[in-house]
Amino acid sequence: MSEKKLAIIATKGSLDWAYPPFILASTAAALGYETEIFFTFYGLQLMRKDLNLQVTSLGNPAMPMPMPVPVFMQAIPGMQGMMTSMMKKKMKSKGVASVEELRELCIEAEVKMVACQMTVDLFEFDTKDFIDGLEYGGAATFFEFAGESDICLYI
Amino acid sequence: MANFDEELDATGLNCPLPILRAKKALGKLTTGQVLHIIATDPGSVKDFEAFAKQTGNELMESGEEGGKYSFLIKKG
Image 1: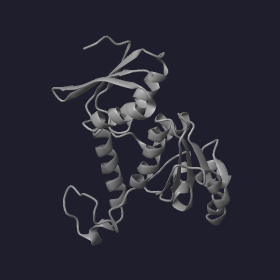
Image 2: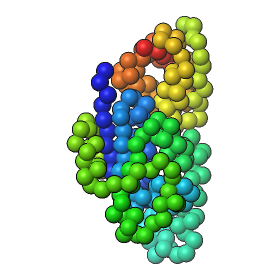
Image 3: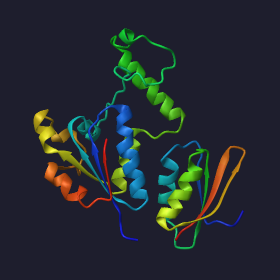
Image 4: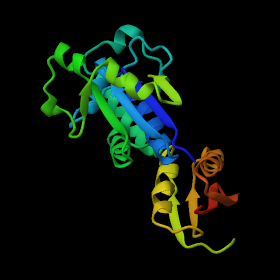
């Protein structure tokens, strides 16, 4: 069986949106895919050594809430932290892996992770804050792998 | 249920953890050995079928009893 390839672009840095790239990449690796994730813009937050990902219902009317909360109330200070801890608790109770755990599984499975150099420059990120083994490159670097891929996802 | 060489308890775990743990456990077995997996994730029934089909391992048995799903996978 020749190895299939999966290329993912991860552009989002919230707790909920951290899941799709890591779930798909780790599973693909388990199925024998050679997998690469290119992290750009807010996706770079998923590469921090210390993750502090948050979730918010603001601008997301589809998020299931335990009780209806008017939008202006969702914006008050502390709400985001509260929602994040409620979401994490719920995930744990349902046996959903933490983002940290899924990322570790991706690293173990040799999923290649590439960070967008332009984003690093744009937001003046310190690369020391990012995980070891992360490579840095641009759009052309992404296409080098993506051009050969069987599946390519923009998340 | 047929004999098995190794057992994996994936109860309480949700997608994609049962698959990832199974992949890891299979890695420690030799060809022809059998892994027994117990899971509670209802999605794992279809997922283990798909996993076996794509990885060349054989899903010998798949069953449910009292909310627990049980799978026998032979390493290919």
